[in-house]
Length: 378
Ligand SMILES: [Zn+2]
Image 1 (cartoon, rainbow, N blue to C red):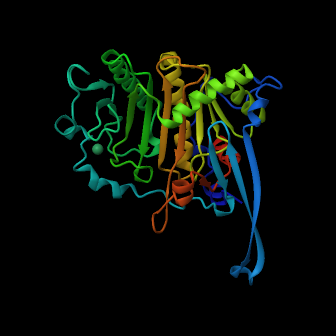
Image 2: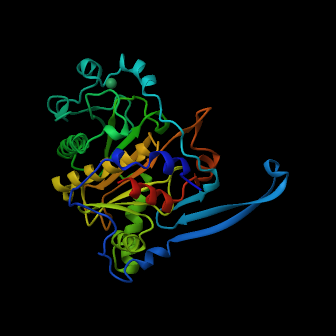
Image 3: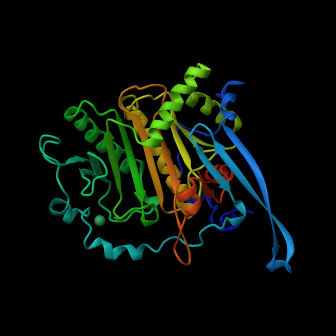
């Protein structure tokens, strides 16, 4: 059984962030019968059985099930090994983060002198400030236009201490940067807002920060989703994301929450050991179409997901929000949240040869169970 510890120790409603907003609706009756069923053809599952003679049980035969899932749309493949699931027993000790604070370039006392500035021709004044958020160039850029959004005055924020306002200001600051780049270079067509939260997810600086990438070309995965969206439209004469939303709202198993026109669900074939949450911006084809209300709804929904991750002791994650600047097809703006962890006691990576060398992900919690547990914490 998954989540035995969780059920006994952590499912206490008074610890759950409470949202009374009318934007929140759990599974609704909005679906239309038969819509979205084409999506299911993209989902494949095969259950394999492995037999061992178990030394823990007098070398009796033990049969272990391995569920191999693939999503032909995203190209993802995952092996669901729920027998390996153990909820992390402890949260990371935040006191271990304090030594990094002394030399943190993102802390307010160092920010002015330790972070780079943009050339004035690109961003007048060199930096962008929006509420608590500050945008500076990435000192170690991955792309021609790669910036960092410093989110908070606090050097360390546990996931349950992020507020919708902190996230909203961060997204607005990211948008300001993207719009400045659009003025500077009218060839850019794709943008992403990314997050490595904490070292297990690749975060090299504890201080909370997003990374923005703006480019004239999409990244490989973004390109695949755009191309598949067009292909689906050409063959089905419908929109894949509308069908996916309809299918998941009808199916209910992986549906998590709706915040305005942003829908959060667990993906059928996750890209992380602890699963994956997809936030789908309904009918939003470009960055400009998100609008202030959309960013508010996304920030509120995201905050709920972060809080639920914290309560499940998932305290590291990657986030990637993909958006088209031009309306280049039938793609909808979307974000993916992938919890990350290092496995105690040796701090083992949650990425192994299957993911690095075979491009298949080992997952220890089924997507349906992940969704169910997050729903219980909202
Ligand atoms: Zn700091």
